[in-house]
Image 1 (cartoon, rainbow, N blue to C red):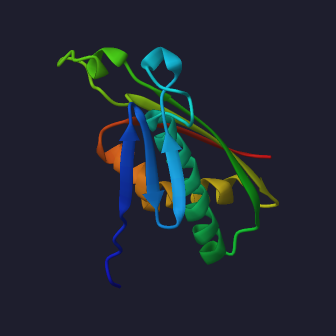
Image 2 (spheres, helix red, strand yellow):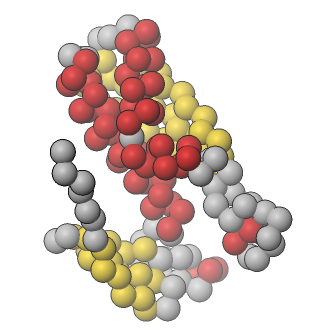
Image 3 (cartoon, one colour):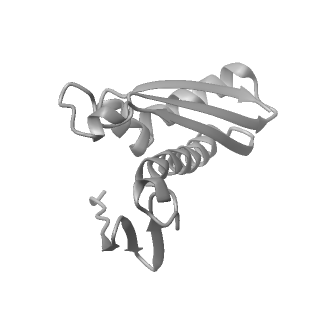
Length: 145
């Protein structure tokens, strides 16, 4: 299989970034408190959205392969970081230290099959494995709806 390549073009207006991702425009910003106009999520929120989206896509692909009755997935994702690293303290990690994923699976499948789906998603999801590879503590709870 050939490698895939992604490209994003971005233009800044102060702390606001308007990016072109394929045919889609994405706006990332900060709150007024951080000097932004609050026109979109901030970059860290966007990572959490990307994680939920990537786990969702991966979950649907894996479920199809497993012949798993996946009727729906919903996510509540929380990231925690110490802002001192962002503010320049070299002793503090400037990105998420912990990310918690609460996934709710709508299915007729057993808890054991849900666990199998979760493990396969965590092993294959590009965003999840990237965070894990950066030594972000990942806390995952997948429950049946």
